[in-house]
Length: 231
Image 1 (cartoon, rainbow, N blue to C red):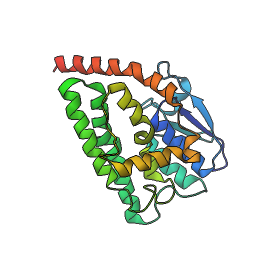
Image 2: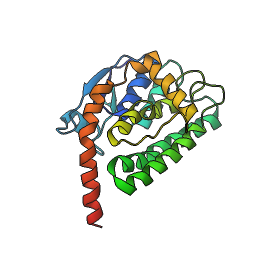
Image 3: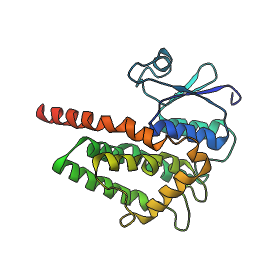
């Protein structure tokens, strides 16, 4: 089964698609990236992810389709040979999964709230984002470059959005979030992560990413204000 062709349904600018791409590259798995237009979703996407209709979707062979980036990471780790992504020790694996869940729930909610707000609401959300960054920074192993130790691993991949995408959010909103003074270890990690040769192969171009994300800011703020008036 592992020798069957691999397709990754994804789109530019998604940190979740980046996760899946990087996992495949770290494992040395050849794959075809199928670019998806989320404003006009393809039959291929709707067929393989009829529940959420979102990317990424990993199609392995003729019938196997795996949805959701965290699920894809674990599948890639188990289905293909190559360096392990998750730690081998049970407690370390459970801890990595816990923080991955934290990032995709609590941290993600505060990040989106900050991007979607302005004024006092944005200040409050930015404060929460920074508090969450402090919690995440505390998980970096002392004396190690990455959360995975000396090489990029599962939790590093999950946190890739902080390393590359957060800078764009800071520029768009004008709100500093990840600073050397407040989070020096996490800043060092972010620089090491984005400088990694394999990671760089699947990071979206900065200028193109900024151009893609900037228009979304006004849309999110408008939606948030509309929802507030309807409560």
